Image (spheres, helix red, strand yellow):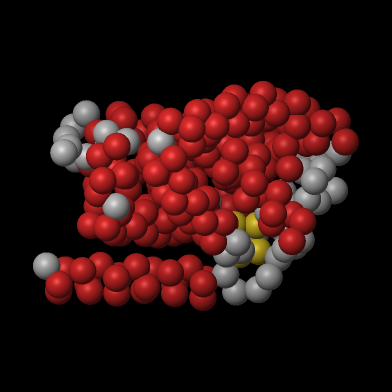
Length: 248
């Protein structure tokens, strides 16, 4: 048991080190950098994202009132997303690649809650770290804190039906990461269609560039999330039982 615990911690440290080293140079971007989107597109993504954020705020308030003992786990889910999404790798002009970390929280608390936690992560990074910005917050919120968590939640429950929980967690986190960047590519393609081929040609170009960095990052995030899940099963078993994620 003790050997297994140390092997798990060593694997978590190794993957974390890989992600830190991979984030070579700082980039002034978070998915889409401040001021990069035309005004009409920035406003549209704000309008689409705001209702999801308000619904998530209501879910978060309900959870903290009904089960206050889960606040530490909520904080951990937010911190996990903050740390992973702060590891930037320069990619498409006006944007960058990084892990997102929203899959773990979506599995634990549902996608609506991660819309709020992910939104706060994006806001803090825009204000404190100059990653992203206020004008593009709606677009970044939609891709990382709405599409990503909802994909993670759906994939997790779909794969869970096969009885393989670890595989469900890995695929949910990895695909959440990838689909976040598919959405970012689509957002950029809509705002900047190619002169020849339009939106579809631009989407292929943006997604193709992101793929070089995002596919290995997605696999790494999936593995890291499984390791964190193992840690939670060992040290936060009662909280997972409260959330009906493991059997009592």
